[in-house]
Image (cartoon, rainbow, N blue to C red; front, side, top):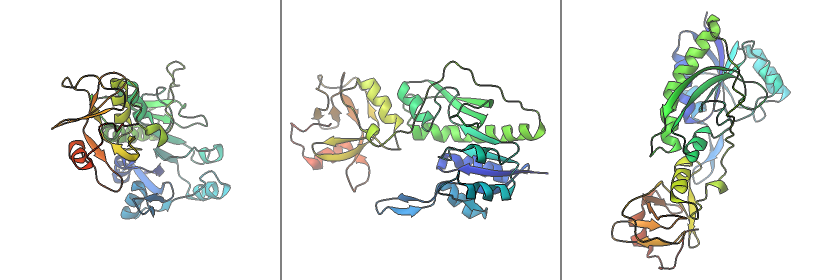
Length: 312
């Protein structure tokens, strides 16, 4: 008999795992749990999450509680009687009453090599820290954050130009396979989780929009990693004069002009350079308010910046 599953997830990187479990003959996804519709786009119109859209397209019952740990929702989930719940980036902490509902527990696919980078932004943290290896881990959820015993891992190399979007996209597919294999092993009784090491614990809390502001006083190598880490979400941004703009990844290039003070802008025929705490960096793309992402050079030609204008 297929295992009765509830799948909990919200963003696009959760889709490969959801699709794999829906299509598996060994699992019966009886419902999908996701976050409530959230404002999206310029008009701020509420939109369903990527996971919600997939569930609706597949005709699977959808659960979108505003308070998942409420007594009302715990009772609703209990009525469904799932044997196990699978979680991929759901986006809310689960309380003891909810964790107790499925007899085989809640199995989380987390995009780091635990115990490194526990928390909401593990991929972003790994890139910002300059890690060269990361991966994904399946583990049993317990009340404390991402500390439960581990079932399995896969590893992935972090490439020098990876953004968090790039890396999450690559991790999502092997992560989906790992989650499916883990659930198979739990159903068969062939997998036993092992406790996480007590050494090597690091935390990766959610990155706020304010924290995604570019600090041009940092060394170029640190600044470059931080921008890649928040691309595409929440998105790196800076003020150029009094104009708030989003910026894409920057590049450290041997052809940089003479040193520039942090935030100073140098424009030549082919490039836009900005000073940092060390060498200048090359700005590739920029997104002014209300416009699409564009070449920094094209933007600079139209903006006609005053030579004293700084990024801050």
